[in-house]
Image (cartoon, rainbow, N blue to C red; front, side, top):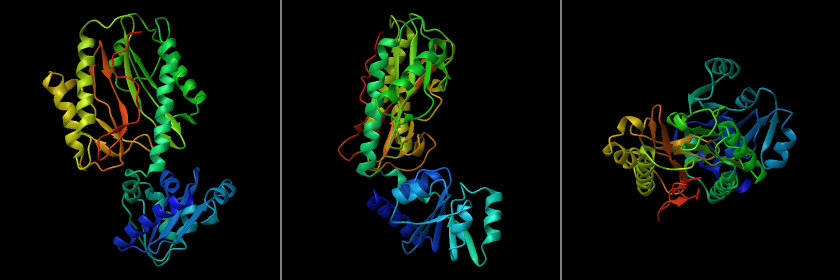
Length: 355
């Protein structure tokens, strides 16, 4: 998609010029991919304020770069940052959140007459608003995630272990077309459901358990993220009420996710529902986060976060309530903020399933 990448680089070039810099040196690999299309373990991109751009990578990826981004001049050098930095002049903006102190010292020593200045998270800010091609990839990643859940449901029953269910989910996603799981899947059963980021283990599923599954597919470089909680055998007791509470909080958060909404206000829309039910201390994490080329990216939704949502920004909405020693419930969707209402990308039912 060279046209898309050229457009993205032009937007960055305008930001570079606005900052009074002459060039930007992009070293975060995910940002290089966003701006060029090249996915690699060693690459950098030099973008001039005038819109010119040069890609740097090593010999392992030279052929791939020629195929994926033929419009870019490619410098083949193991030291990508140094090789590209030597082509800059004047003020060179760099990704200070990515470059280590040691790497900065080495780069500065190689560049005579060049002033290094922080770029900030300019590329990450550009990445927040997705184009429709990106949203299409996210939509397919989420569709694979939905289908994997449906495929694995019959496998979930007493006697299975958390790890077995996690492996089944991940295998199913790959079989259905995912590149790989978007992240290490969470399967938390019974009392382990009270641990938001529980690592699936050897615990055997029992009748009466609530089981929380947090997983997603990676497709075309884009990450899906969905959580569903199911009941095994029966859905009686306090956790049933907690499920209804979390479902109500999740609906409130989705409804609040509109353009121009402050991220902390979207968090509050869900959190207030849970707080009013007396479970303020049982919802210990933020409401959600952006998704795209990374599983966690800007914007972040939390009571202490700043910023506003914008049209075409994909986010997750994932409230949870966790009762120590007893279990927990989390419900999560990936959605796209739209002017006419949120577009849900994960479509699996949120009715409590008893299996």
